[in-house]
Image (cartoon, one colour):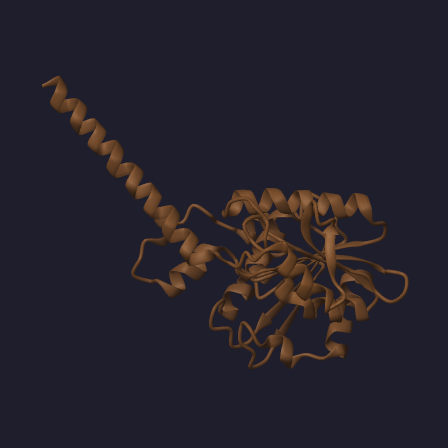
Length: 267
């Protein structure tokens, strides 16, 4: 009898372990799409866009580009869930044109960095990256994030002294997006990563700019609007009409970017 009970317990442990492992695999396949090429390849491509390793090749946390003249401040941008930081070089073009230093932050397990995927790991690493930027550079520190990066930015906004936050194609909470795309699945039980931007920004009272793609097929506009409605003032919303998740940047111009940065820096 004792032997049978022991086998039953072991079987239950195995089933539970298998279930938990399946949850992690499901979550990671749903949220994270990293590219992890050798650092030499990342930096070779980056140099063509005026970017270099930051803070160094030996301690790589992202890519840095300086403006042509004195920097008005520093933007730390956390990118979306696919590719790696080097694929966001066009942000560096826009921000440096407006006189800002840019750090395209890289996540653990992305872009040649070691580490593991998951909200806990990405957020903890983002806090370290922001804190290093704060110690290294003077002037206003602006926090920016696109899509997944907006969820990361929301999670760290209260952990480091930042002047303002820019959220591009954000959600209210990632469970909303998962439920939208997989309405037949119990996503609340399958996701351990929450990226609850409403909760994470509840205590933030600095300036927040929110950019929504009007026809976003990945993060529908209604979820970004829900987040915006829950934010404290001062805040401002930009909706890019007709834009989808990955083409909104082709529908805005330098004047548009100037208005966003002016709000973030000057209010």
